[in-house]
Length: 115
Figure 1 (tube, rainbow, N blue to C red):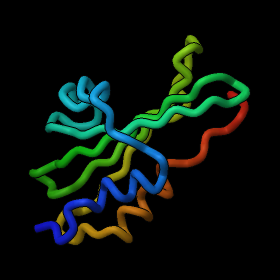
Figure 2: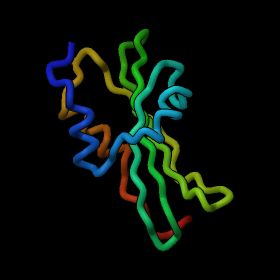
Figure 3: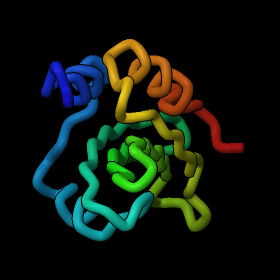
Figure 4: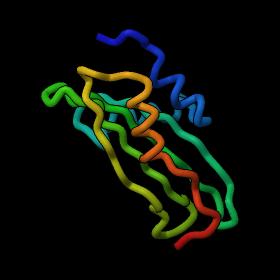
């Protein structure tokens, strides 16, 4: 079904995201889908403090979609959730160009100030 098995890995590496063993806890719990998911993370320090990005990839087999979720938080703040959004991408016509388009919409640069 997939012509390039490393499309997601390359797209996330290009944006500075990595999959670490510590993200395995999120891969099992199913934040954005009840199916198995894979999580990439990235940390950045801004004027507001440390910002943690988690990008989830999960397959919705019934609807033939790839669900991509973005969760950004400041773990030190009490109400530190900055972004919690998701998009879907059809699996039948999955390609690198469409994945980049969706990731560009979803994964935006963190702002230096909290609103």
